[in-house]
Length: 260
Length: 237
Image 1: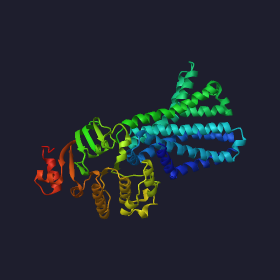
Image 2 (image 1 turned 120 degrees about the vertical axis):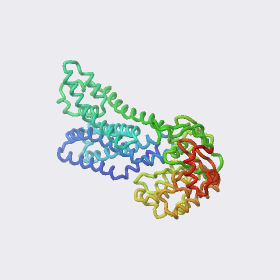
Image 3 (image 1 turned 60 degrees about the vertical axis):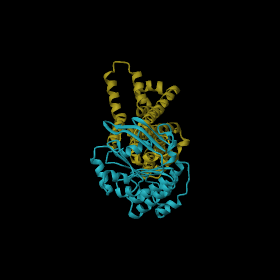
Image 4 (image 1 turned 90 degrees about the vertical axis):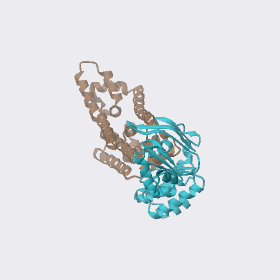
């Protein structure tokens, strides 16, 4: 597995797109800090970018890498290697190289603006942790989708559709539900609904670490009461981890019975 | 070496293999032939463990194919379409495959044989189709595997490389290896194959030497003999 990981990672690290992605974050980080001149505000703006963009990039890269390396995968399948090893290795190669671009691309500008001397370290690390989780989650989901669909166009469409649902439509439905059922107690429902969507979960986790969480009002107080505690944090991070593990298990199941 | 018993495979409603029984236990060159969609590639992929059969059993050197991937240590496989990670050089891909198979054979002779020295430091996506096929052949043949499976080995090769490939296959045969080949180039098959395994509609329709096939169909021309087997209803197995 580690050999496949190494080669996929190495292959991607030398591809132009990894650099474009890295440069994008470098530019974004420096521009945001230059305009805001404040680390905390920079984190807020970045959060909005990260929770939407990172899943999208993870999805696109995951699907693209799977389909582009399909013939090469056939070559690997003829080697004395276990099937799951090949796919998990490739998946981790993509996921980790994207995560590295994110960590380096955002880490350099923030570190050079004196991150380690400020009190925004906690917020910023949480931002990076959720960013890495979102990368791993959406790459895993897109790999899984690609494994089920031999048709490139279909696989691509399903993956993008899933991103759209998670990033946009889910929130709309969530909000509508809150409005329609406003007469009922919705505390537990909203916490559960947040836990079930990794994008929402990441957003709430970061927001609660920021001063602006006070603006969330009553909902904010409920969230703070759950996610703000140590136990809530553990539950949230476990949920994110579960979002990585479940698609991986699915990959394992599908890879065992698939014809190539 | 290879034993296939009652192999069935369907893709959706399309039944591709309908009970294949095949035993290959002597070294030599075996050509798997058949019209498009007769199940050649599916059979090869089932032997390689890439296609999971619906029914039946395949053993390679006594190892059940579905149990563990270790038996593939004895197989060198040349896929039909060769596509490598675009950012690797020829040298790197050779080293990578060696690393993945935990074996570092000497490739100097093969590289020289196919004239690949000038391309060793070039990236794979800059190579022409024929050169890529040569790289692919090096990757397949460098391990000295006792069983070699070549899916359309001639595609993209220029006449000189084709001659060299033929000589190489003969050399491997003399070394006592079992070589399975699929090809659409009948002259290539006629020249190389010791035995022909002719698939038709998911079953083995004919098995025997080129000479036997010609005799059965009363023709001297191999291509015509193949065409004739397709039109005859009774099986020669």
